[in-house]
Length: 527
Image (cartoon, rainbow, N blue to C red; front, side, top):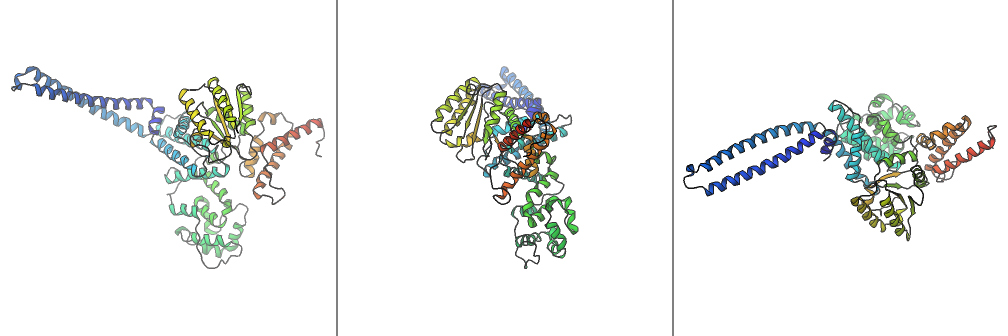
């Protein structure tokens, strides 16, 4: 199905020729059956002396000639069909990767119920990737561009609807699947190494002779030594203990060279990950990202995907992909305020709140209001946002049926539906798999948080600010990023666990601007 779609988009002439040949083959088959029936009828009605029936003899000759013409046409058709199939085969790598990606994302529901994706939604972005791909004259180069475009388009679409803790899982699955297929990576796939990376088995060995190494790490290292390529690792670990201890105590050991001959593993980051998995499992996320950056073509673009966009810019991008049949679903997290961004976009699109832009907070008795707003918006091309739909799980079945009805009847081209909810297993799959899903969680890592915080402010507002305000604003973003990262330690450290959000940063920036305006451009009011 994907192969037929990509050929239809890329080489419509081939797909049309293939369909014409299939129709012609069926037509020839019908003609042959009709000729056979006609011949049998004539023979059944023929006199005893067949040779004396001139019309019958002439009819037999005509039938024979017709059959010969049909057989010749079938042979020519088979030759043409073979040529078409050979041309279509050039696009098979694109279709094969598309199939792999589709089955990969359909399994994400095992991670979280909210991650549901339909084939129709996938096909929409599959077509989008074909249109976005760089044009090339050579077929092989064009297919490579199609494959890269598909990979990034699907990843961006899916990752925008994943929680931060699941994005790396999805990206790792994508990378490992491509390695298994031999599409990326310079080495043969080693299933033993991969299973060790996943399971991190342990082996009880002699008593741990290294006081600085946890027993769990020692037992993992012993299990690693069972693999042929790492048979000398435990011995080297003990013999070069001071050098391994220095590596072990490094803040980011995944970026440091290993002692002895193990330093060569910098050229094989997959095997280096196995050592990190044993000795410093707390650094596996960072090590995995390093591996993806170096292995996946243009890996940085995947790791840093959307890192320079704020929530409003991501919403703008998603709106271009949405249709009257494709709602946008906001999966809420602590401190997120998606309605504020949507209000700004509605205003920018000339929609008036309460008139052509309807905001409904779901709860008892609000189902009637929601249905009324949907009917009006469906006919007149309005926007409707239904907040906290998880509070009415039973009514969502009716909503699903109503959306199906709108889809079959056809809605106004400007009609858009937006849904918000907390993650919940009560949300029907039929609603989730048709939607473009968006999350708005703070990213992980100080650098990523700083980027997100700085990008929250529009380029225009930063350019208009004076140098003093820019510097203080950057310091404010840095402080906000530190607070976001400190949350993972709970009440330990210099702050209690508090749900700092982008709203707190916005309010702090507003206070900053007020102080700077009141200072009249003079001395900075630090106190």
